[in-house]
Image (cartoon, rainbow, N blue to C red):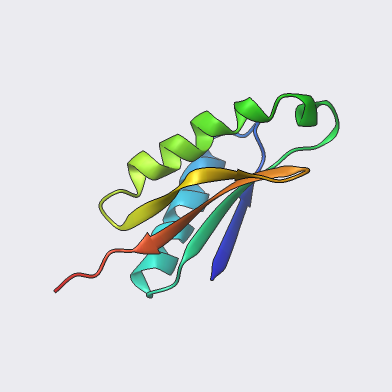
Length: 87
């Protein structure tokens, strides 16, 4: 399993870089966990991570299946993707 970490406040180029890495990992047959790391005051608003993870799920839907529900841990929120089998 490969893990990709991103912060709730990020730029578009950072998102695209992480998305490209996720597609590459899924193409290699690995599971991918996208983790939104929360620091400081961000921890009081974990719901801000959900739109980011849903955007990843939408952008990766042709490559992988998202395993909902979201996993809320102490300082992070994550979502796991399993590659789709292409026959």
